[in-house]
Image 1: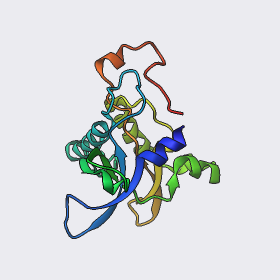
Image 2: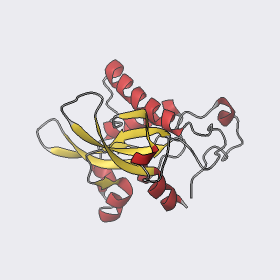
Image 3: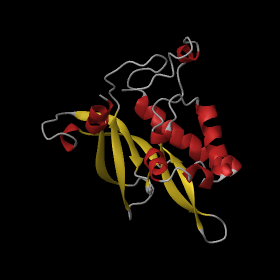
Length: 187
């Protein structure tokens, strides 16, 4: 079910970035309509939570210098025909810039079990801050892309790029669910 969900809901679209008309970026589109109900998360709010996480990441960076690195994300409305040739009307969803990364963390750990020791502590700490503030409920290795950054001396070191924030910012009801109910995993 999870693979089908990803295949149906995540469609690569090319859009001009909202920040610069001169550059073209690749984005992943996730439709806002959710086929399942998850306790503590209002239906069809995933796209807004994705964009909110990106805004929070950018704001924390501006205020504190902590660079969490959530890719550029926006809520948009597109023609249904641009997603499905038989579609009609409009579809609301989130678009997230495709991160420059080698792989997701899960694949990277399979290829190199020592990769965790190579990730700088400040990177992990900043992501922990993000997940605590946003009350992220489904963080796992598949929700990180593994990229590279300058280590300050001109050499490259691995860095984590957090993706998939649809199960962040639970509702107030989600905060009072019995233990385990709001840490729902798809699949």
